[in-house]
Length: 208
Image (cartoon, rainbow, N blue to C red; front, top):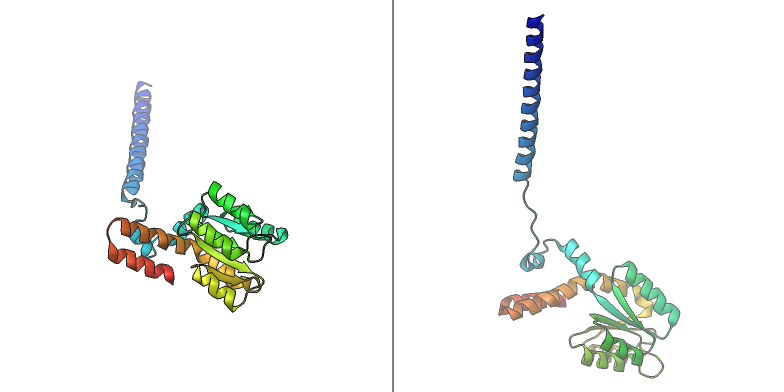
């Protein structure tokens, strides 16, 4: 009887030792996998210029960009606002040129999309005054009453011209806006660091 009890104790001790060994081995393998797993790094600015991490960067840029939308046609303005928000942009709305200037003084804006024909101040004058408030502001004249002279005047203000009848091209421009903004920021960053060659490369990329 004593032998059986001793044998039982030895068997239980051996089983406990085996379980402990298996637990240690499992923990060791888990740690090894964690050590072997490469650490994720945040993309640097030069990596982004080469396209590294661009989808993530575009998503971040989109959420940071605030666009001022200016149009006296309320239904069109609301539809434009809704679609911009669906694409992830922040928006500020104005129904006249005068209101747009007030909003521009109150808010930080990165771009402005302005109608041409509005009561009081027209879109071209509005764009010129917006650029006085926010130097380097990216602006778009979106009109249903455009012609060659209006297009020429728009380009003279270093603004982009679209007609409401070609909304497909307009939305393609908006799709690429985060990349254009990124190139602008990169160019400014290179210039601050004294890297003239890098700044010129980023500037050429922005103009594409």
